[in-house]
Amino acid sequence: MIELTAVQLAERVQQGGLSAAEVTEQYLARAEQYRGLNALLHVDAEGARARAAAIDAKRAAGTKLGRLAGVPVVIKDNLCVRGVPTTCASKILEGYRPPYHAHVIERVLAEDGVLIAKANMDEFAMGSSNENSAYGAVRNPWNQAHAPGGSSGGSAAAAAARLAPLTLGSDTGGSVRQPASFCGVTAIKPTYGRVSRYGLIAFASSLDQVGPITRTIGDSARLLSVVSGFDKRDATSAQRDVEDYEGALGKSIRGLRVGVVKLPAGNSKSVEDAFAASLKALSSAGAELVEVELPNLEYAVATYYVVATAEASSNLARFDGMRFGLRVRGNDLNETYGATRTQGFGPEVQRRIMLGTYALSSGYYEAYYIKAQKVRTLIAQDYARAFERCDVIATPTSPEPAFKLGEKSSDPLSMYLADIYTLPPSLAGLPALSTPAGFSPEGLPIGLQLTAPAFEEQRLISVASALEAATDFAQRVPAGF
Ligand code: GLN
Image (cartoon, rainbow, N blue to C red):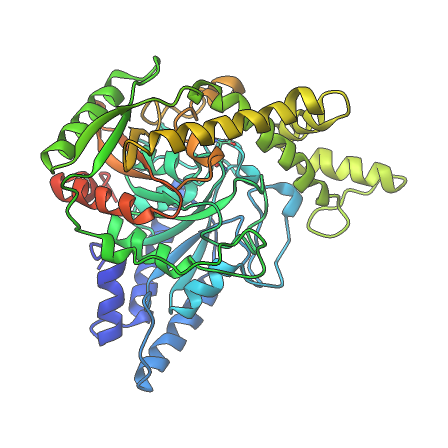
């Protein structure tokens, strides 16, 4: 059954060809079998079995099952699930069990999905390699010496290794797209405001979105349609109807204008080759390629790392040993705060809190934070101008395929620079997707990123589905999985 997509699996369970219980057992066994990947932090076997039994009973009673009937779902560990450990891969949240479900979890459960595990990630979603997890790095299923990407590396590795047909991640500056490209799977970062962040532990609130990571575009479209929609508990949630994402699958892209930006230097050859081949495939499918410019693209990395760290320094102030998780006692309150935060946060999180605090401090606020906000506006205006001439914009997702574990971990700046393609759509609040675009000569996957105007996820889905139909990249499975 592991060859079935989520859409196929849900249909089988709805019709009674497979029980939710047998699907759950199969995937729990895989979680156990592939523990060595370190993709999962907590497997909720008991909860999953109870849920599957309830779904089977519901069907037996004649109730129509939901759109995710019996489908196993892996959840990034920064999404709250009631009663289930939720750590953000940080020591500071050790022992924390949220008393409530995130909005997206409620939606998945309402459609009869089965949560089977929480996925490993970079601590508080800060990173591009998963090496910032307090619980050890995740391995890339295509080559276990390589990083799976980050910060949703556990979710992407789980999707690629078929530990669940559906996984959820979060994306602040690329965290569903870049790991998807490293692991040869598909991910969608929705428009800012499309998916409620209620119950997503905040990193940078003006950027954070929740998005699907799956093996096929059809499954991502299904999961996105389940989790999207207005929620009054997130003040940024968009009050508009959810577009028909599954209806966009298989739609012709004839005449669609694909904007192509002149690529900056520094891409690996295999990425440039795969990018060129994708453009060729798009034009064979009838799309029209047009040159566009995003002149402020080169400032995106600097802008993001000011805005995101500033917001993180504020959001992470709530972890002080009083309310959640770890408490390291000192002689007085201040010492307790200091000791808890020093022992609870890893080095990258501490670095970002300090950078962000600095950027917000009096005297530097105007020079860094305000300036970054202004550049952010310029980047958004670049896109607005570019979209006068095209319908979607294509770039690589990452300048290189999955790098080796340890290769960049001692050099944070080189890690930040690798986010060059995924940061700009995030800063502009636009929807963006990563779809499999080929393999390097070493057999590592490569992704293509597509960006669309706000709330035009359907365009992204149509283009990805045209590419998926034209190649076999999404059908390949890493050896041994
Ligand atoms: N790699 C980026 C960072 O480290 C993006 C992370 C994310 O999207 N959560 O901040």
